[in-house]
Image (cartoon, rainbow, N blue to C red; front, side, top):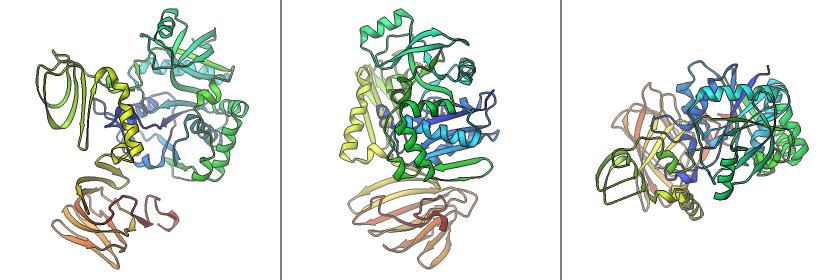
Length: 484
């Protein structure tokens, strides 16, 4: 049987799960009640399949290091990792095209690509493995195989797949794909037994999907082929990173694989399955993962409640008091609070969209932000100043950089800092500090074996994160990484 390459597609902003899901920390990184992220669960599911030698992930290049942080504690067996790093999202068709072309070049045209969204939850892993085994049999015969979930309710928020002729291995030819139906149509689909929810998962030989793209969406495959010719990669024994060229990737059509190929091809099969699946598409879906108390409430964090029923409250850092509430969703983060009627949880995306139109940071960032070297948290800010707590991992290093509009005062709280400040290089220990003037090149790194924790006080007329000129950077973020 052909080699299986699980391909995790980690895109999308998850706007219906704001304020926890944000552009720079999207839905796949959300922690579920058991402490694992959706991305971690997807990675573990991929690694648990038979005959997996490598796992391929397609994600935004800015999320690479956070993705590696999620994978690292689960990858004890040392599964090799491939990454295709997008400069920005162009929907699933270009992402899958890049994965297929990469798979054909690296692992042969008969390699099987198992496309798995990073933000879905599957709880029946045995059923998943059985469905994948059936899909592999059909994919080896040249079918483009999708996975159809047997519906248990009349959902209007999902696309549907209509089953056609019976194939081997429990599969059916797809008669047609159906857009999200109205309530009456969804109920008819449920009663009729011919329709399945479209899970957005696929299994197919790379040569089959490349041929299908060439036939039905030649502009997609041509643009991605051109992009790969202008892209660069780096690799070692256990990890390969292919960074897509921004200018040529921007020419790829923004289109889903369903529209580009699946709805146009006659060579699509579906495996009906029941996987304990959820797309975790709203806070209402998240609350269903936790048991309710005797009042119908599901609470995470400290609460004091009087006459409160059927509420979902997630506030890990602050005490929440409530009186006389019913059927609300309350999500508290350090910089944003969501209060919503539980029956309207799908509308949370409207808040996120408005914040994006306004250019508000709460759409894009949390107060705590992950960087390749560690994290920073904005503790306080006001006119002309910003105070951050910075944590640098052992052997981590910020880029050699300069700011035009701000000065910085660094105070070491714990650990050891190696500092470059203009022409000087020196070590700082706990309770020691340095001052960096605007326009002066500087770098901070951690030469120790424990985390470096420090406080940074910024002062100036403009304190935006884009006031940065990088000269060299060990993570390839400088204009010319070859100089690092």
